[in-house]
Image 1: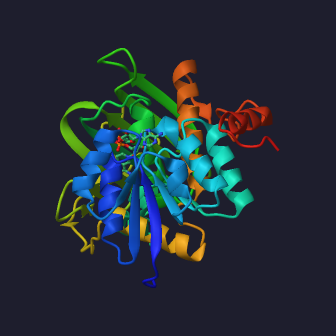
Image 2 (image 1 turned 135 degrees about the horizontal axis):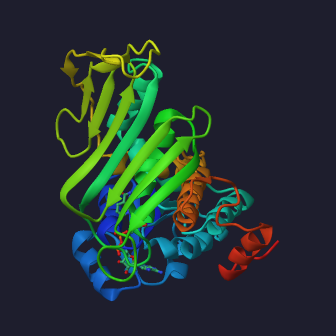
Length: 362
Ligand SMILES: NC(=O)c1ccc[n+]([C@@H]2O[C@H](COP(=O)([O-])OP(=O)(O)OC[C@H]3O[C@@H](n4cnc5c(N)ncnc54)[C@H](O)[C@@H]3O)[C@@H](O)[C@H]2O)c1
């Protein structure tokens, strides 16, 4: 990356926007403007990010930045990102890209119309441990993948505008698609609201991948006594566990398995239907760099060169489709196919979304 000068805006200086501001200001040649409509948050930025300019006025900032990072609550992503894209600025939007398929689709279309990169903050796709897991799957080391299981639990931050699925599952959905190179084709969902009157705080998703039909299970919770950040890939040769909370041994590969010996005889046969294999547990060395820094450095490259991001708006749209399908699955109580139109009844809704966001319905 060349050390040319680049001016970027971080919109939203909350929990996560402050982390973006920290990593972006560590990159040589980057000048920052922090945009937050809460004066208290701007005051925090004055201390946390002393070299940044501060404003509550996005329009003013858009006049003199070359790229925009949107780290505001999910329901505001659509409007802010549209304004930036229509001003011709490359945009990195935090996950989830939007809170409906129509708005997510409209963002992808607007970026294409203006010829500017749109990137989604699927941070785990910039995580060296996830790259290692993917390499092990694709090299065949784990054998045929039988299923994937993920858990993202703790006493989490209850969000105002989205439930626990829309808040936490985007990470797992992006990890699963990245690992397997395919999208979920269907989803079943169970969710429960334990505290408060607003959103579900515990949920389980069961996905089936589009082509391989491999199942994947996602458990997310804001109401669990233990912090868990785990991805398990069970293959028919070996199994791998990625524990994001460990400083070392983030990935452990278990050389264990179960083989069927079932000869198809009547079920009352006394023989065990399986045999067990046990072997070593090894932990591959993974050179780790802070994923948010890797992600944001890539965004800066996209701003400077106009290149297409590794996690483009389309990936964000794919995840939003699965989230919308999971809403439909919860309501119906059935497994639901993930389709283009999830959250989108027809093309008129895209036009409506654009009109509501201030764009020209073309
Ligand atoms: N990639 C990750 O691992 C990760 C982790 C946490 C959060 N996130 C995402 O980051 C985003 C922000 O989450 P958070 O936890 O930091 O939220 P937060 O509530 O802590 O902060 C949001 C900030 O945005 C500001 N804001 C709201 N509307 C605005 C507007 N219209 N213009 C300017 N500022 C506005 C608020 O004043 C606040 O300071 C969400 O999309 C969330 O899903 C991503």
